[in-house]
Length: 257
Image: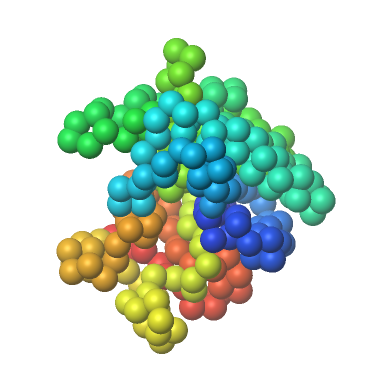
């Protein structure tokens, strides 16, 4: 079966020009078909603060009201996405920036307001795999941002970790998938201040135990929860950590069922 590599990058990588350069250099060196999925980074929150709009998160997920949605759409689907696409073009990668509404790639629905109201947050209903497969077959590298839509003209803000997992799951019937959640640390750490506490492997049971004990919390929860969902769907190899570690084979965290 053909292979496809999906890489998700987030805030600490996007916000640091040196880290982003290193990450995109590494991404560009990956052979074959590949997709880059990105979050918004700190730039979205910075713009909201400049405009006097309060920034709220619950378990690493942003609360998105109407004003927030307008701003993050401009930042995530605009400046952040195009900056990444331009830098990939400079590396001879035929990249195409996409939100969920472009080519109807990702359709979502507004998350129910109970038990917690996340505002205009989107839960994915369908990934149109045929469109992504067509792009990949024409040597196009999709660069997907977190803005989705509901099919009725309403834009939604969807967690990029969730998008990465859903795209991986949808493509796993066609490709053997390598999904890598890239961030600034080598992998999942028992103690972020102790470089020797890296977990080379993490199982679902261990994750549940560490989450309940508070060892794993906040922004790592969406990555790991979605990563384990992708692993459970089959035909998907999921890793977490530095992209250079992933490519070189240096220690990083592999998710196991």
